[in-house]
Image (cartoon, rainbow over all chains, first blue to last red; front, side):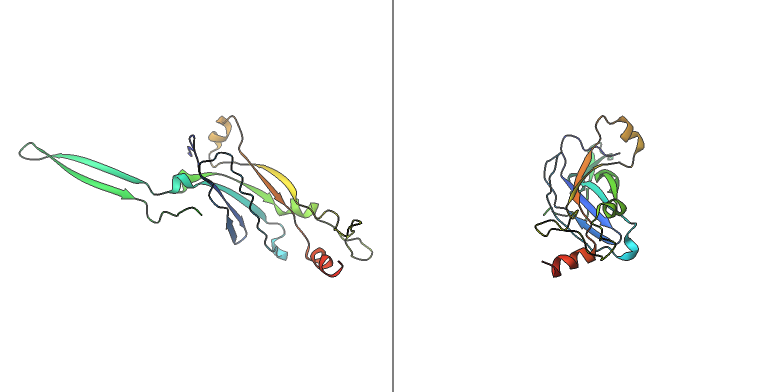
Length: 95
Length: 87
């Protein structure tokens, strides 16, 4: 389930058949106005197609670093810890 | 990745745009024009589309429906040609 919370960085992906376009990312807005234009040709066989507008939150896509810390006991009673960082690959930057 | 950042989607049927597009006159195939020479009906129209998310329960529980407003039009190629040749 998507929790956009109190903040989002929305952008829209517009797809028509095999053509895909995207708007820029608007930072920190719940009421974005992109005011962008696009046009594309509609071929004869595409006349019954639909234009799909899909909204995404770049906020949630940006790189996250999760750190997992495990505490392990050792023979002498002192703690030993293993630290693992998880990073998202290939975070995209907004335009 | 998909589950966290996806907000919602909504389609706009091209048939909807087609139905509002300018139509040529049956006798001579010319699109009717205004006094200034603009083809009648060839303007961007507003469409206010309500987004639907993947989760049906989320849709029902939310108080407000998020919408996206798009301005769109479909121009037949013959109308484009007419605009080019007849100005």
